[in-house]
Image (tube, rainbow, N blue to C red; front, side, top):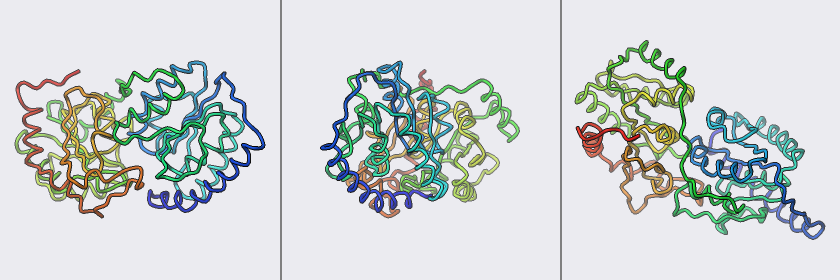
Length: 397
């Protein structure tokens, strides 16, 4: 299912289901009052969307583990996030929901609910932002404490036991930490998990790059021109990327490697067609799995990217990044690690940021993203020169 279909289902099916469950919940409260068990043995955490978001939730997940070292933590997410979960090891057990089509999703959800009900979780934490589906799943767990974000502006019924205020003026790391702070555990550690790549993966990617014509002494620059279908307006214009890539090649004889998923391959190929010096460009869109992508990022001098999951992967690896924000604000989703290695471009126009949890991450410009179009390739190139090619610069650890 694409993201627009998922949003529609969440809206048109989610609201009436939330209404029904809210009425049921009020009646059930009068019939039976649940007793809280102080001994927490099982915790369920739900986060369905976003590799980058899961990575940014690691301080909260780590705090949860330290707060309940003996409890079994189960993580519920979409199957597309399986690779990042395997790397981060954020839980003891994982449940994956397939989103390939609605029928498979529906029946797998029913099967998952049956499994969850049998587990008898003590605490259930919903890390999604005002999704009706996740609220319903949270309620149906039957957990004694059901924690999630709450806002009167986003009606999802009164199905939580612990309502957490969503403060859009704080970084997303702090927002996730608020979900576990209500449990009384220490949330001072805000460092996002550092991802480490194995020597085996590094060896593989070096041999792979060599087979693709990349030499050991080549200046390697990684580029991600893509953004997920959550909001395509997060893309810096392809023409600007093309000009910047050309300038980096002519100025520094750089080897530029473009990345992306299988779904991005056509867009990346079209962009490459408009660039000269094709012998200096390598298109790896759709050719790397997550561990291979991480190993590749470890090899680049710096990584140029839109606001997307790969940005947070690179930051977690300690790789210098150049990122573009417009529909979203870097104060919410920018690099949380202030190590002096990152360049962030953001024009802060009146209409920016326009994405929020209150409008289901929908841009107001219908594709005319002036917030990114007004970032010129000249200013980006100049900043890159001053930052990464000056004699004074040395990557910080």
